Length: 263
Image (cartoon, rainbow, N blue to C red; front, side, top):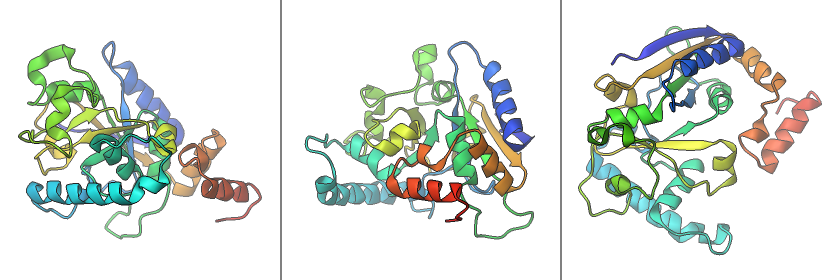
């Protein structure tokens, strides 16, 4: 199915468009959102962006996971769970490359990431911020991996057997299609960002290329307007930096700006 392309003006237009999409969903359907600062960027996990074969991707991820486990233990509260999924979620939210692609249940979180910073690269036409939308349950039901289960399939969790072939430490044969999953909210960032994920199997392609072969819908919404004005609109709606990064550096930047200091 082709990607549904939309253009909107400002944050008001974005909210109205997303509400229209949401109101057209079947009962029980809901949306996830991902914001990207430039519409030329593709929907693919960081660890896969240099085009390595998937065998090397899995090996690299496993090495990173092992090193992260070895060196991060002192930073976690006593009793922090030590399984591979939970470490993978933490790695993702602290910037390490994994097979996970971040999504959010909150539209404004996605808008923040789309507007957070102006891209430094140059290309014809310049960069336009984009918010992607997907119905994660519909996506899963349309994948070859899960389609046989019909309407019973929703968003998966780490307790579901169908995810075993996707986990970092597995002896099972890898599945091909990326699928939508809920992860453990094991950091303040994941909680604040209402973080959710898609996890890649053996398919090396970006999500939008895979989406052309499935019945699930992907919406790509270009947000027109000056980036500074769009960010100001988010702030006026009460959505600030500390709502995405609930940490002291973010609070310092946020409070400084209220006094006219540009950090």
